[in-house]
Image 1 (cartoon, rainbow, N blue to C red):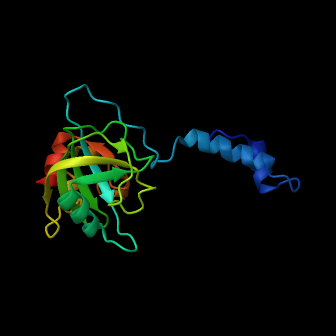
Image 2 (image 1 turned 90 degrees about the vertical axis):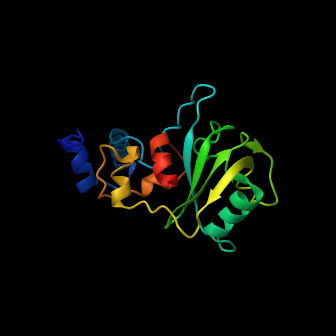
Image 3 (image 1 turned 90 degrees about the horizontal axis):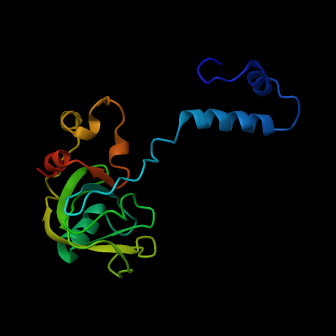
Length: 193
């Protein structure tokens, strides 16, 4: 009651419902959820930076049924020098020519980085697996791949990253690599060595 500011009647309606109606229970759940704020995975969209200023990004790449994350990175980043985002990829509207991006192989570490050479354009590429899911393609330049020597985001590295300032580095940290995220120049430097 004290922690969530619900009254005695609200609690009793959950413990001893009066009938088959669930409307009061739903109202209480909505009230509690509103007090909790947005779920942690729904981060706010990054803010735009002034023209000419470089943004730094980390983006995850995961294995698919017919292609591993390493194969995807090797083909798109290393060979074709392109990458693609989906409609709801965080930062998609802000990424621009001159920005720096690093690629996190899910479950392993950062295995590549490059300079963004164009803003994402909505034009599907046959080189992209599932192009209907990732229609926003952009060009890369100066790719650096270190597939056999990834930067592992271990406890020691997390303790040095700005993103973990004021956070418990011993707790789960998947939030950092679950979606494309804007990071600091300092963090980018550590992640790409």
